[in-house]
Amino acid sequence: MQNNNLNVVVLAGGYSAEADVSRQSAAQVKLALMNTGFQVSVVELDRNCPSELIKIQPDVVFPALHGPPGEDGTVQGLLEMLELCYVGSDVRGSAMAMDKAVAKSIFKRHGLPIIDDYIVKPSADLAATATDIERLLGPRVAIKPLNQGSALGVQLLPNGGDIAAALAQCLAFGRCLVEPFVLGREVTVGVLETLEGSKAHPVIEICTAENEWYDYHNRYTPGQSSHVMPAEVSEELAEQLRSTALSAHKALGLRDLSRSDFILTDTDQIVLLEVNALPGMTPVSLYPEGAAAIGYEFDALIEHLVLRAFRRGQTKR
Image 1 (cartoon, rainbow, N blue to C red):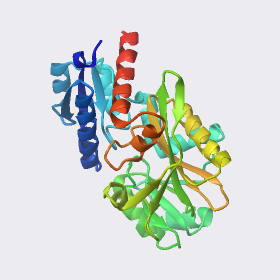
Image 2 (image 1 turned 90 degrees about the horizontal axis):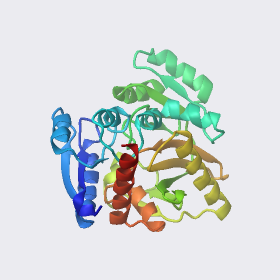
Image 3 (image 1 turned 45 degrees about the vertical axis):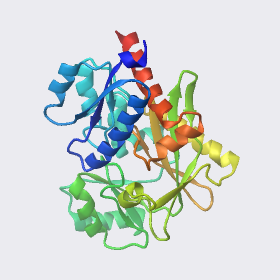
Image 4 (image 1 turned 60 degrees about the vertical axis):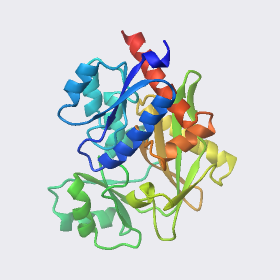
């Protein structure tokens, strides 16, 4: 079947805190699909979305979504019920990757390099919890929402500080995960499934201004961060990072694509932070850069993902 016979819906937006980023990804995906000859339309993730999908009956759905409910298995469950094939991981894989605590428990069972953590619920006594955290993890901590992406809500205390106040800010996004603060380089490795098997991208190092980190502003503001690919690490260390990304992708049961984020310490200790099952596709996103390095320029990457989903749907039927 020629691409111009395939009708693709790109899902965008929604009510997550990352909706605007999602719309940026969707615009890029739409353009790539148009360039490669697909019939394409963008559908906003709102209460009219199911009826729109039923009316259009697309051959493939591309969820260009970030944050819940687009990444946590909810939208994937809707698409399964509508019997529509779609790009990306299934309900189970999406849900496990989105919940950082669940993902870390799986990484631990598979022997992947993680660090200790502490889960905090919104109902917790913050003063008592802060005392407990400092006793168990020390005063220097990183606090992040369990079910958000793009560094939203993350609170870093690299020199210690008011843990209770930081928890209060993070808990505005729901349950949170507390980890010891680890000083090091921020690196990432994407994974792309192909007919020849899963392929890891080159290691990319993320560089920001001194005393800054890869937060929401630095991620999505052009010029606020730079990406070094391949990262300046030994080939042995690069291979360990690529291997860990492939293992994490497989451990979570992910499909089509993912991106693993790491901290690399000065002593070359690898710390796996999390895995993103639907990496960003904006003009400043990391995943497309890595894919291009293994032979998948952006248009070809999007075409590959859509045709892979379409073939999967044909086989299922």
